Amino acid sequence: MPGLTWLSRGGVGATGSMTFVHGSDERAVLAGLGVDPEAAVLPADPRFSSIAGITVIRSGEWLVALEQSAWPRGIRPEVLRRLSAGTEAVAIHEDIGKGNHQLTHAVDGEIITAVTTSVPPSWGGTQPDRLRPLAEELGMQPQHGSPSDSDLGDLEILLLIAEAAFGLSLDEADLSSPLLKVPDQPADPALRPNRPAARVVDSDVVRSYVQHLIDRGVSADTIAARAGMPASWVDRLLSGALGPWMIASRADQILAIEAPPPSAP
Image (cartoon, rainbow, N blue to C red; front, side):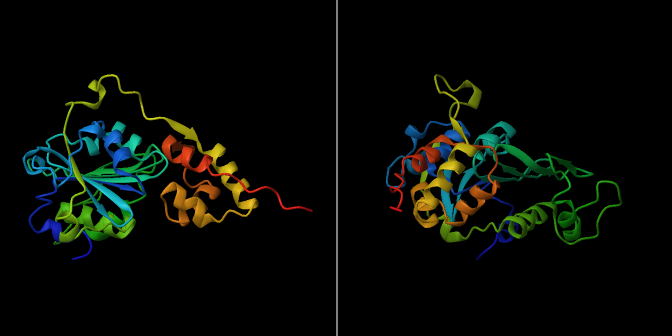
C-alpha cells in the first residue's frame, strides 16, 4: 500500500519515529544519528531480533531510520542538520502521550520547516510558513483561529503532508525488509567518545569540478553513479540547489573521477 497515511490507522505504531534521508548510504545515516556504524547488525545475525535500537530500511531513493524512543535521535535539530548535509531529511514523530506530533524538513544542514501539533500548532525553521497552507487545507488548526472541523487527526495530517510535499511512502514490504539494526548507544550523540564531527566539503569546489568533467565529456549519469545519486542530483548541484556544503565521502568520490584529456584542436 503506497503512501504513509495507512500507518495512522494504528498510529505510527511499529515505526514510532521515522527519519527519511534522501540519497544517502547506511553508514552516513548511522554516523549522522550519532551511533556507531561498526555496531550495526544484519538481519541474518541471530542477535538481530533481540537488539533494542534503530532499524534502517529503504524506500526508493530514501533510507529510513525507525526508532521507538521517548526522545528519538531523528527529531533532534543537531542530528537533522548532520543528516541533511548535502541532501535533505524529513522526520516524523508520534507523541503517544501528549499528542504533540512533529514533522521536520531539513536541507543542507538547515531546518527549513518544523511543526509540532500542539494547540495551537507551533511552527519553526527558516521558512516556517512553507508547509502551513497545505497543513491548514488538510485540516490542521490555524495558529490564530478556531479549531478545524476536519475528520483527519493531527498525525494523519502530518503523514499526508509528507506524502504530498516530499513524495514519501512506506509499504509493508519495506517494513518487513530491514537493512540493518544498531544499538541506540551512547544515550546522547554529544557523549560519543573520540568520534570527530562529520567532515563536509564546500559545494562550490565540487560544483566547479563537476562542470569541468562535463566540459571534458563526462556524462551527468556517470558522475551521479559515482556519487551513488540519481542523475537529477547533478542538475541540482550545478544549479546551487544543494546548498553550501556536501558530505565529504560523496565529494571525495566525485573529485576522484579523472577528467579526460582535452580534445586536440
